[in-house]
Amino acid sequence: MSCPYLLPLANAAVRRTTLRWLWLGVAALVVAGVFAILLVLSRTPGVQDAIPWIDFFHTALVVHVDMSVFIWFAAFAGVLWNVTVPRQPRLDRPALFLCAAGTLLMAALPFAGIGDPLMNNYLPVLQHPAFYAALALIGAGLGLLVISTLGGGLPWRTPLSPAEALRFGSLTAALAAALALLVFLWTFRELPTHLDAHGYFEFLFWGAGHVLQFTHTQLLALCWLVLACAAGLSAPLRPAWVIVLFTLGILPLVYVPILALQHPVLSGETRLGYTRLMQYGGGLATIPLGLYLIGHNLRNRPRPEPHQRPLRAALYSSLLLFAAGGVIAWLIHGINVVIPAHYHGSIVGVTLAFMGTAYYLLPQLGFTAPVSRLARWQPGIYGGGQLLHILGLAWSGGYGVQRKTAGAAQHLHDLPQIAGMAMMGLGGLIAILGGLLFVVVMLRALTGRRV
Image (cartoon, rainbow, N blue to C red):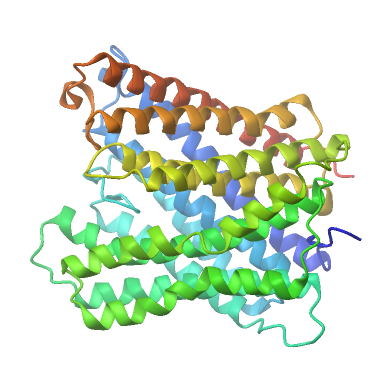
C-alpha cells in the first residue's frame, strides 16, 4: 500500500468520544457564525440602535474570534488525540465536560449584557469575572485532555508502523500544548499586576500563544498525511522519516525554558524571542512535508472517487493558504496589516486541514460521507476567499495601512490602499460564506441518517 497513513477508529468507545469532541468543535463554529451575523447587524444603521448592549461590535468580535480559533482548534485537537493515542478514560469525560461548560458560558455572556472587550493578541477577552471563569473551565479541560493524551505513552516498538508514526506526531502536539500551559502559568505568576488591562492580557497570552502554534502545526502535518492518503494520493514516506519530521517540528521548543529563565516576562527580549521562535521554527516539519506531498503527486494524480473530492480540495486549499501565510511572514516590516495577512493565512491553512479531516472521519463515525457539490466546493470557496482576503491585506500593508484600525482611522487616501482593502473585504465575505457552508455540510451529516 503506497499511502498507509489513515485514522481507523479502534472501537465504539473511541467513536463515541471522537464524536463528542467533533460536536463541540462544530458547535463552536455555529456560535462563531451567529456572532459573525451579529457583528454585521451591530454596524447596520437602524438595526444597531435596537441592540441594547454597549460596544456590542467588539464584544461580539471577542466571542467570534475565541470560538472560531481557540475553541474550534482545541476541540479538533481532542478529536485527533482521541483517534491516534490510547486514552486515559477517567480523564476524558471531565475534560470534555469542562470545555463544553466553558464554551456554553462564554457564548451566553454577551446576551447577559456583559461586555468591556479587550482586543489583545491571541485570546481577546471580556473584562468580567464570568468570562475569566469560562476561560478557566476551558483551560482546565484542556489540561486534563493533554494529561490524558501524554499518558498514552510513546511508541517504542520496532519496526515502527504508520499508526505509531501518527501517534508520535499527536504526542509531540500534546507536548507543545503542555508547554504552552506551563508558559501561561509561569507568565501569570511573574506578571506584575500594576499594568493596564490591555498590557496585562497582551503579555499574559503572548508566550503561551506562540508556543501553542506548534501544537497546531504538528497536527496540521498529521492531517496532511492523512488527507493525502484518504484522498487517493500518494505519501510513501517511511514511518521513521515521518517521526524525524515531527521531531524537527517540535525541536525549536527547547529554547522556551531558556527564554523564560533568562529574561523577565515584560522584557523586549522575551517578546521578540517568542516572535522569532514561531517565525523561524514554525515550518521545520510543514515545509518539507508540504513540498514532498506536492512534488510526489505533481505528475501522478489518479482520478478521485466521489468521496475523495472534498478531501482533495481541502488538502490543496490548506497547502496553498499555509504556504501563502508563510511567504507573507517574510514581508512583515513595521506594524501594519501585513501581520494579520500572515496569521490569517496560516490559521486558515490549519482550519482547512481540520475541515477535510472532519469530512474524512464522518463515515467512520457512522454517518454518510459528504459527496455533494456543496461539500466539493466548500474548501475552495473558503480557501479562495481567504486567499483574496490576505492578499488584499498584504497589498494594503505595503502601502502603509495600519493594523487594528477601522473606518476613517485607516487613512485610506490613495487608490492602491483603497483597492487593497476592497479586495480584503470581498475576500472576507467569500470566506465567511465558505465557513458557513462547512457548518451546513457538517450539520446535515451529523443530524442525518446513520449508515
